[in-house]
Image (cartoon, rainbow, N blue to C red; front, side, top):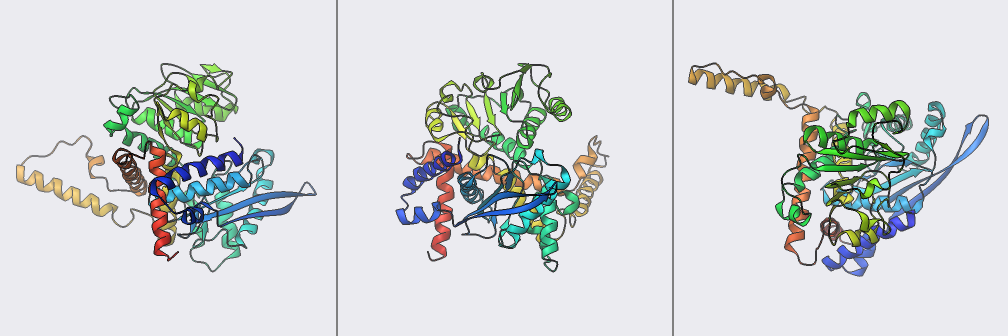
Length: 465
């Protein structure tokens, strides 16, 4: 799917939700239109030659500031794709009550084509171009990792901002997704995949939605196929299989797929990919992953590229529940086909784990204290005192085999996961309620978008626009 098609799909979903809310054409146009898109061209000397690179940063909506959104490194990126992703960030933040506007960035580059030294120089030069335009700033525009970027690149960007703004005490809040030793937060790397897990868990708490998807029981034993074993797909598959008892029977990657009806060992497969750079020669390897996308399973999790499910293959999808772990993996046309018989948990919601924990990291950076540091031991002492009181009253020593786990106070990772779980639960409850309470809202995607637009419209009204 091209960037233009992606943007058109996002706008069509917007239009459907705007009709449900009966928003005026003028207000709809204001919310839908990106505020500004910046294109920068800059040169970097590599191998004694100046190579010119092109990058983008789109601010879709600054009804709340700072605006938030990742920076991806990809040869396929273009302006329309960046604007589509920025729009999704606006709606995503509104849906899950994160106080940010939406933004997105991209550098047109294949990061695998450069060594670490050259990639750092390119990243820092791109950062300079954005920083001097206030497109990276703790109070105005806060990037995060995306496709082709990670902790390393975020550390470079944060350091570049600090060097250019040495007296800004909040400098490290200019970007999220940083390493722990550079003011990152525990749980950020796993956040989007963990959010997918929490989203699916919440779905299985809603009997009406399970009935629509023709599913029964619990997550345990449910069969799953994951498309893309990058950061998001890997963590989602790992947590669902190891913690919830689901069975990941298939994994689709760019160079083939792995299928095992008894279940794929996600940890072993990931180690194989890291070692060899491919899924080839792994037990259950198939040369084509396209057929596996339409294999029988309970849950399909597209966690990689946009438009992987389209009008050409939508009717062949057999999964009862489709969870959009990636941004825009289902085209608008495919969505219309699938909604007749399937339940889709939309990217607007399912993909929100990353920005949620990024928000926690941003708050941590502004407060300059690790979550849990002030009260962890206080919690432990309260529980120990409670146990001692019970033992004193009963005259018996409690035989607690897992006493350490019972008395353990909340550390940063516990609080991050708790906050993420609460965020995903609350948003899903609102989506499900609206879908079943309003006749015009037929699916979770329209429900999610209408909730987001309602909040944004209220924000504009409060601002007097």
